[in-house]
Amino acid sequence: MRQDQITAALRIVKREIRQWEEPVLGVVARESNRDPFRILISCLLSLRTKDQTTSEASSRLFALAHQPATMLTLPLRKIERAIYPVGFYRTKAKSIHAICRRLLDVYGGAVPDSIEEP
Image (cartoon, rainbow, N blue to C red):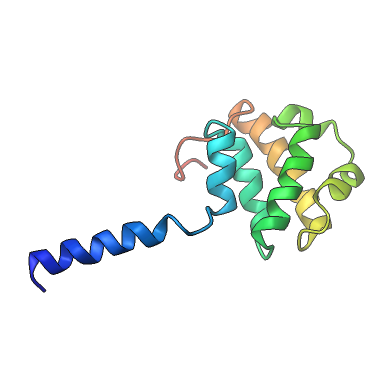
């Protein structure tokens, strides 16, 4: 492929990509000023769930609590109601509590900067 063909192809791709809908995790990252906790929890909610459902559930949940310490004050049932109808919402509510507990106990309430963290 010649350089002019590559340039033309890239121009088409750039034009077309603007029409795509932004994935929900990109929206959460942008709207939360790249808050690692909100991104982590939204990522968990997104598993086996459509983006629209994930977006709505994330908004409802983060309206109740948006930090590990405050999230732990919520009863599991309240988290379940906030995130329903995401797939496996009961299991995910328990996982959210476990993640928040670990973040507080091991990492001082912050999401680790590296995947290599224990």
